[in-house]
Amino acid sequence: MKLIILGAPGAGKGTQAEVVCEKYGIPAISTGALLRESIKDGAPLGLEAKVFVDQGQLVPDGVVIGIIKERLKKDDAQNGFILDGFPRTVPQAKALTEMGVKIDSVVSIEVPDEEIVTRLSGRRVCLDCGASYHTSYHPVKDGIHCDKCGSEVAIRQDDNPDTVQKRLRVYHEQTEPLKEYYLGEGKLKIVIGQEEIADTTAELLKVLEV
Ligand code: AMP
Image (cartoon, rainbow, N blue to C red; front, side, top):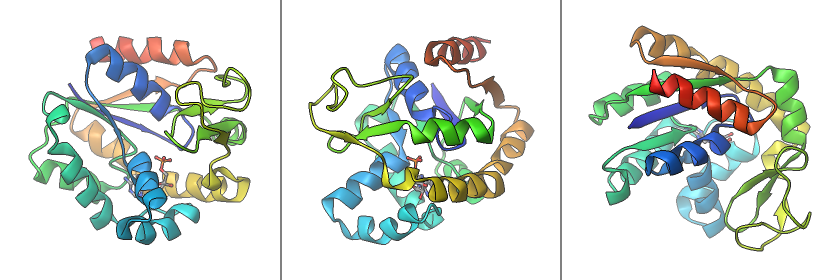
């Protein structure tokens, strides 16, 4: 299965991608996570991307398209994948088609902006492995360390309130038009993001099975 998960920052794309990829045995590919890795490693691409990520802006299309092109060549992506955070613009979606990638479904997780702001204020990420948590909905077991690798969790730099507002604006202006784009291709499915992670997962699996 080749699936795209759309949604505003903090709508739960990464969390849901993790569950779905386990069920279908395919990798979840997040351009945000790949960019954060490059930034952490101090790679030239990371240095170029950091300015945009820190400001809540989109990294230029050419950069992320290059990253995805390379990632999709890997063995684990040959039987399907879930894209979380890509495409984020219409040119990125067109690039995917030009690469010969045939997407089966596009699921948009809908969460109101006010709810996003509250959610992101509680999001915590592992500084080492990138696992994502939430102080209320999905807390780490000991309150400090990642359940998976034991490193400390922290607030993501771009989850501060000002940057969140910018990211929401960018989402509505540049990414939301993708709903229309994929609706036109007959691939768009809408899922309402629920408070409970498991409720959203149940909805999502339901729309995928239809
Ligand atoms: P995310 O982890 O998906 O919230 O992404 C974090 C940040 O990485 C975004 O705010 C953008 O700055 C950048 N980013 C991730 N994916 C893309 C993309 N497809 N196009 C442009 N920028 C991206």
